Image 1 (cartoon, rainbow, N blue to C red):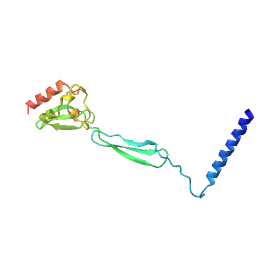
Image 2: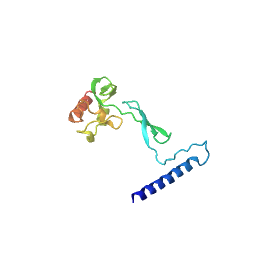
Image 3: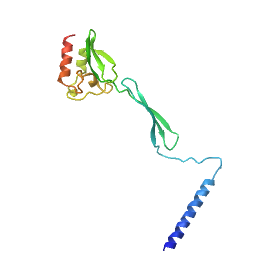
Image 4: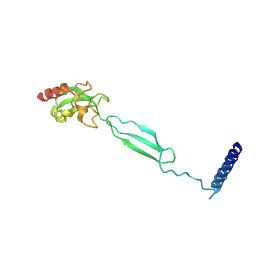
Length: 155
């Protein structure tokens, strides 16, 4: 029984080796054989992180061939808090990049939505909630709304 397995294994090996050698010498000798695949297997070759205002990018390359592509990553947007009142309105300062914007209190009041109440603000690129955490405590609440109403009364 053991001898039979050895003979069969040797025969299969011989067939496989013969098949590979015939395939290797088939066709034109100067043309390299390029494996064809149907599904790419991409990895990130390089990436640039987005900032509050500048977009980033990611470059992907296939592990199996030379295919590659680059996709843009949208800017993240700001996370503002109240900085000061000015003659032109309310100055907001980004907690991440220290950039500033000036808005009137009535603009901030228009941005207010009850959907934002008692939630953590998002970056301004996705919605307006990044403008509304005026006290900078990480949650949009009644204190922030009261600040907006108070500032609107001073306009």
